Amino acid sequence: MRSYGIMKRFVALLCASAMLMLCSCARMGGPVVYNDDGSKADARLEEVIEAIKNEDKEALKAMFSEQALNEADDLDGQMDYLLGFIQGNIESWKFQGGSADGANYEGHKTRKSRYWYSVKTDKEEYLFFLLEYTEDTDHPENVGLYMLQVIYMKDEDTQFDGGNDILCAGIYKPEEENNETVQPSGDIEKSEGEEEIVQPS
Image (cartoon, rainbow, N blue to C red; front, side, top):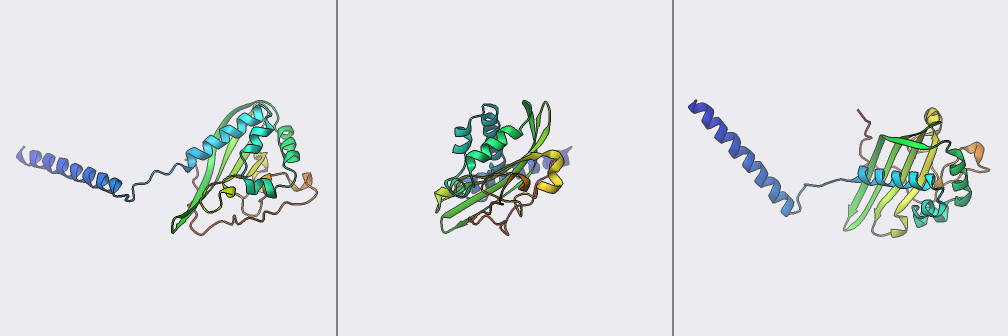
């Protein structure tokens, strides 16, 4: 019994020390960091879905960055295509995967996210992919949605690659729907520091 009591005191002391170290790190600006990239992407998806439900082109357009608006090939036409492409009433969405990367060099911060989701209507299942700059202190015109891709989930293997080769400013349309392929002029190549893609369990 005596050894059990000593062990309990040792465990309590160890826990108290760990909590003290954690608090100290937080006060000193240590490595205790909350990453909310996924939450931001979820919120953006819900905004996109709401705009689609309401056929609100102005709200949808306002989500894109100034850079994307400048580079997009006929965004109004792309939005018309998207609103006509979605069939039925959107009922649910589910996270599929995603990644985020950023840099902080001498106070100049950038942050970019790539997330994709399964979105179901009462008639079809779609894949929604969002590529967005959430932070760019040197170039605020880059902040916002850069690319929105919506395809049938059944076409994932042929029309989706996480924004690597299949990439455009604005809203994606399959090549057969375009007279020419849109090529972005901005630097949105996948960085070496990009975090590992998260797949749902």
